[in-house]
Image 1 (cartoon, rainbow, N blue to C red):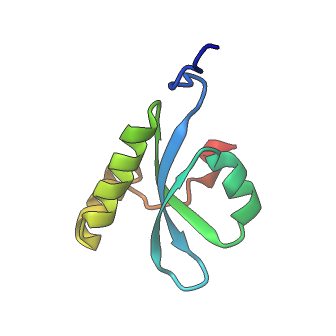
Image 2: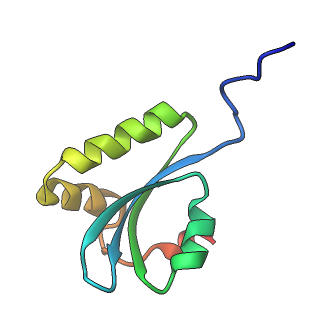
Length: 93
């Protein structure tokens, strides 16, 4: 019996920041299918930042880092990728 390859090179792991349009809160998320998640939640999210990873440990480490940062630091990260702070949902379609 062979063991499956623990690293699936086809899988993309996503970490993202979005503003919930219901309560204006800044949220941090993780997904294996960000485009699919967006399609099912596009009415309530305003995507501000995303980053793709090839390895799950890298993605979860980045998510953990973001969760520990202050709002001011998160805003600086958002501004580096998205200086206009526009909704970047359309980039992932």
